[in-house]
Amino acid sequence: MDLNEVMHALQEFGNNQTKKMLVRHGAREPFFGVKVGDLKKLARKIKKNHRLALELYNTENSDAMYLASLIADTDKILRKS
Image 1 (cartoon, rainbow, N blue to C red):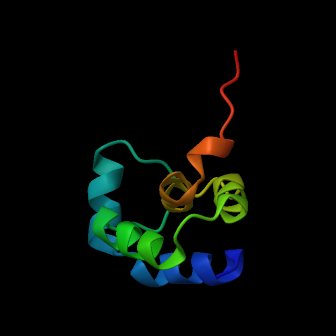
Image 2: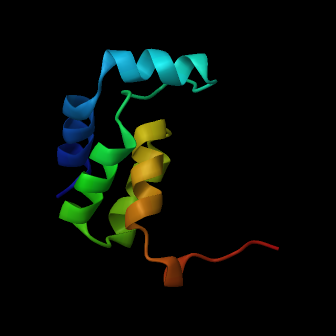
């Protein structure tokens, strides 16, 4: 999957009720309101893809950033000192 396909899938998984609940708990735009279970399903479909994880993180969309954390290759993440 490429970035556009993943963002479209996230938008499709988005749920207004979930979005309202997340806003009440402090979530900030932009995000679609995707349930964590749906993010995990999508991550299992994508598997590990570090390049895509970086692209998702750069969108600054909270749902995409969460998904990025699930598909990133932890061996390639560098800790800044």
